[in-house]
Amino acid sequence: MKKKLVKPFVDFQPYLDAHLKNPQFKKYYDEFGKQLEIAYKINQLRKKQGMSQLELAKKIGTTQSNVARLEAGNQNFTTATLHKIAKVFNRELKIEFV
Image 1 (cartoon, rainbow, N blue to C red):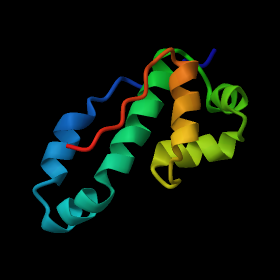
Image 2 (image 1 turned 60 degrees about the vertical axis):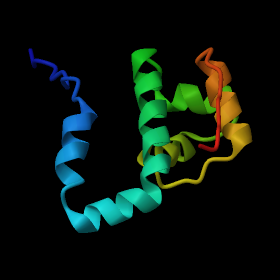
Image 3 (image 1 turned 120 degrees about the horizontal axis):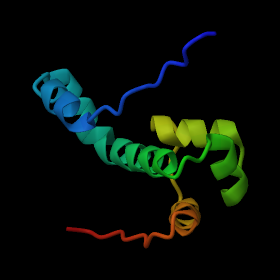
Image 4 (image 1 turned 45 degrees about the vertical axis):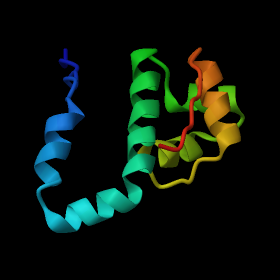
């Protein structure tokens, strides 16, 4: 009988802090960082709920591959999509200019 490997939870912050010391990475992060932060939060919410990408996709009316792109930071977010995702996870979407 094969043992199923379980991926441990990895805290993203130490990884990010280490890579932000690289000037080229920091430049890219400053340009795309917020999109990546949102993507990471969506991924974490989904995993915390034990939901697959396909299940989330069905709930927000899109495809699994689209959710994969959202979570990878390779897809722009519309406010409509973010509202749908927030509703799935019983969260409030808050967007502000600071």
